[in-house]
Image 1 (cartoon, rainbow, N blue to C red):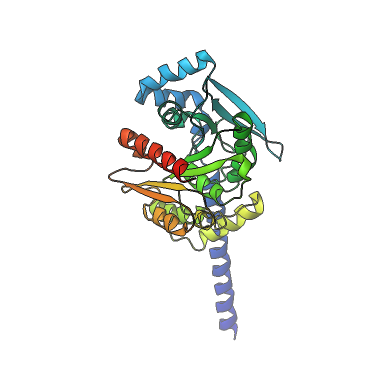
Image 2: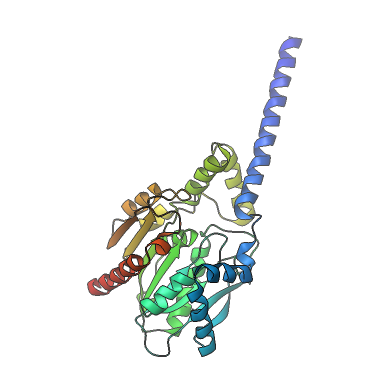
Length: 323
C-alpha cells in the first residue's frame, strides 16, 4: 500500500512538473509572438535607409511628394483612447479612386513604399497607409496579428478615406499580416455609402492559429499541443483576442465583394497552401487567384514588378466594369 502511495505521489509530481513546464513555455510562446525582441517596426530611420538602399528612386519620389505637400502624416484616436498613425497621399486633381495599403508583422508604413507608389503613381489613386497597433508611430503594447486591427480599418481608416474622398471607390490592399487584415476586414459589413469595392490580399495567413502552428514546428520543431493552446488561453485573458478566433477563412466566407488573392509558390513563411483555403472559402462575389512562380514570402511585387502592377490594375478595372 505504501509503495502504491509513493508511486501515485511520484506520478502527481511528474504531472505537476510537466504542466508547469507547459504553462511556462505557453507564456513564453505568447511573448515571442506578440512582443518580439525585434523593434524594427518603430525604427523609422533605419526602415527608410533599407528602402532607399534597395530602391534609390523611392527617395527621390518620396522627397518630391513631401516638398509638394502631397504626403502628410495623420493621427486618429481609437475608441480605447490610443492613437493610430498613418500616411495620406493625395493627388492635386481628381484621381482614379482610393486605396488603403496595409503593412505586415513587425513592419510599418515606410516598408510599404513600393506598394503605395504603385497605387499612387501607376494606378493613379489617392492612398492611405495605416500603421497598426504597436507599429510605427501608433500606440500599443503588443502585436495583435491583425484580428483587432480589422476594426481600426473598418471604424477609423475607411471612414477617413470616405471623408476625404466621398465620391471615390475604396480598395484595400494588404501584405502578409496586412493581407490577413484585408481578409479579416472583408468579412465585415459596410454601408454602401462608404464605397468599399474590392480587396487585394498578398500572402496573408488563413488564421493566426494556423500560422503559429506552422512557425512553432518550423522554428522549434515542436507540436502545437499543449503549448500553443496555453498561449492562446493567455492571449484571450490578457489581450481580449485569441489565435483560433482570428480566422481569415471564416471572414472571407462572408465576403461578397471582389477579391484578388496573391501568393508566391516558394513562400516558406506563410505556406502557399493557406491561400487555397482562403480562396476556396470565398463562395460569393468575384474572385481571382495569382500564384506567383518562384516568389518567396512578400517578394511577388519586387520580383515581378510589371506583372504585379498590371494584374492589380486589371483586377480593379474588371471590378469597376462588373459593378
